[in-house]
Amino acid sequence: MMMSREERKNMIEFITKLRSFNQEQLVYMTDEEIEHIYNQTYYHYEEIAE
Image (cartoon, rainbow, N blue to C red; front, side):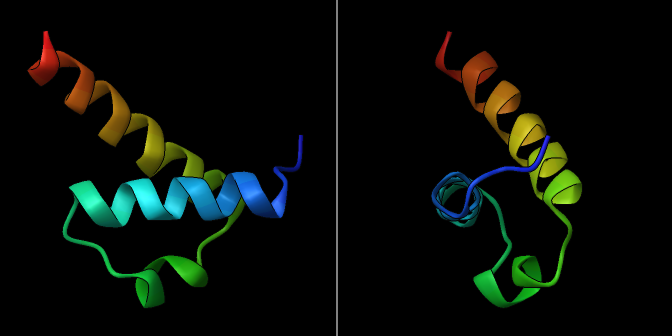
């Protein structure tokens, strides 16, 4: 399933706030790569919050 532009934008913003990535690095990645990094970041952040 293809993600929307807004969804991709939100994922990239979340990743750049919590990881050492910049938007320039992420802009050339596929949706699948962005989603994978987002999921890793989200689950790591969720574990720390608990």
